[in-house]
Amino acid sequence: MSKMVAPSLLSADFTNLAKDIEMVNRSEADWFHLDIMDGVFVPNISFGIPVVEAVNKLAKKPLDVHLMIVQPERYIEAFKKAGADLLNVHLEASTHLHRTVEEIHKNGMKAGVTLNPHTPVHLLDDIIEMVDLVLIMSVNPGFGGQQFIENTYRKIERLRNMVDKSNSKALIEVDGGVTLDNAANLYRAGADVLVSGSFIFNSSDPLQTIAQLKNHRAK
Ligand code: DX5
Ligand code: ZN
Picture (tube, rainbow, N blue to C red):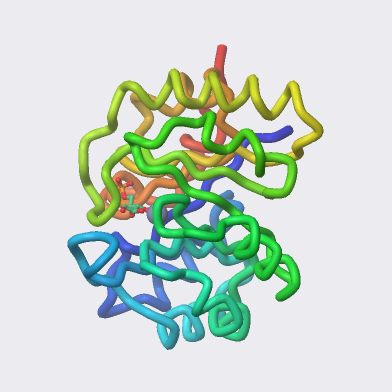
């Protein structure tokens, strides 16, 4: 399985979003990562459905939509219409996660389940074979540019073990504080997809930074 990179547009230049979308199109990145925050589930508000629709018009790669909202089941169809290919819902925000995953599939999208830093991986035991991806938060969600939480490695290793021992084909994605300092160790622990926002968009050469993240393999 080749390693993947999903730049988070939260750190893009919103006054010239088209330019950053084109940069990601040209880059070695695999997906666009879009962070939807409602000011309730997380203490911040980002952008919503019209922005996802706009990104979808220019994006030439799949849209990985990360819902940091309460009651995500209410918006499954709306995000499908907006162009989402993969819909990530937080386990902590989903009372009926099994039903929500089924609904995401019925709407023709891949289903991801996201875990906050305090949420143990074993809570996925009875759903891991249904999901296409697990997103491990390596910061408390809500803001870009935060510091990576070191305990994440243990969580990834446990999850890698769970996935490999089951019939699950779930990809393991990591989000928050990802840089070239931890990329190799994250891949080595078992991650398949790295989300990175501020490290990419604040760098002097985002194209090169994406290539470096992508090719920074575990030794
Ligand atoms: C945080 C978001 C992340 C964020 C990552 O709540 O889910 O996707 O954009 O940003 P960095 O890479 O700057 O930590
Ligand atoms: Zn995210």
